[in-house]
Length: 344
Picture 1 (spheres, rainbow, N blue to C red):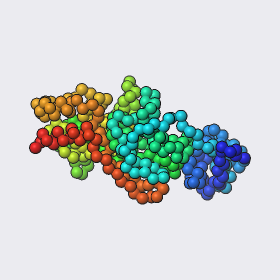
Picture 2: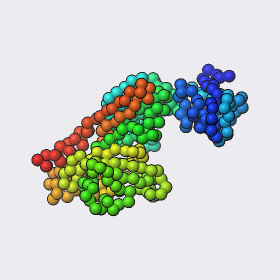
Picture 3: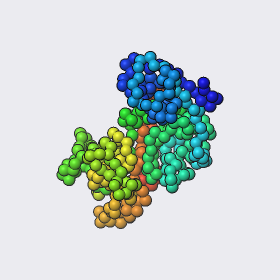
Picture 4: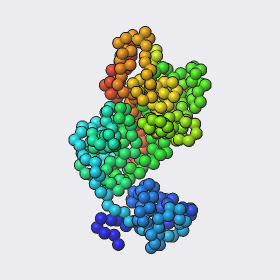
């Protein structure tokens, strides 16, 4: 029997359940329960799942068609993260999700070294407690992130159903995400150096494709490193939008979404992003090539010149296709304007 702070979800295992209980649970649990695979795995481990009246904790147990399942779920608890009255640039909001344009300098999620002033702190204040219990906690559903010093678009779930639906789209790589960046050099198919680099290819339309694996750097845990064995598969595409001598404005999009992916891949290709202190090394633009004022702007740019400019996805509840765009932030817009003025 459930107490006042728990809910019991009851259902039966369907036909052809396969060989593993965890997979059968994920397939057959009622959709309205809004339990993700990771949440089900934690509930199994915690002894919150019973099969035919007996507690079951083995995810690899073999299920049988018709098995009676009961899952005891505790009500969501309030998160320890505190709400903060921080202004938000909101492009869209409904009962299930919110789309925001994150400013430069804002961390998405609280972490050691950044416990306050984050997007999550701001969203908790904005929502005023109107949140479902995502993962057992009343908190915004962060399904993707962008770096502190990268600006641009993020979608955040407000309900369990939206959280699971959005997470599935990101997992299947069906979300449309394009980034604008300003990089060193011009990544062109005519460059023989690029064509000889492992993992580099070009597609129709002079589209650079970088295909590698990525993993944490062996000695610097704050960085990611390119690998070809081990790590996680990662694919980035980039197209030149405008070129300005030794630098270019590029449009990048992701087939996968790994930490620092665009920054690492463009650096590996020899086209590190302007201002990227982590992956750009000490690379500088020559005053002889650009003129001293513009070269100083480029060399003094205080962050990676990267902006999450467009975001498109299927609304996980209404099934409507949504698409959003955000203009360049002032610092990148000013830098691009200076580059364009130079070419006139």
